[in-house]
Image (tube, rainbow, N blue to C red):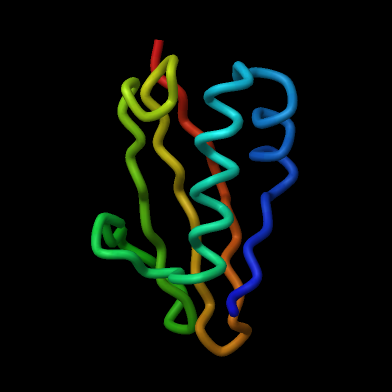
Length: 91
């Protein structure tokens, strides 16, 4: 099992700027990252750190019940942990 955490910035957005349905969708992704930190639907992003890999997962408005949201996170296999860096919500 991988541990998944929110950065301070992501936590602030999660608690203050998202609707209940959007928050639920994001929290569902966080929970799924604990089971599989590199799912097939995650987009690999460039990463300057050789000890980690960065990914983005896009949630469509149909999945969130609101706006589209992109979840950007970094996975460190050696630590068996994922850090959700940013939550980017559409208009």
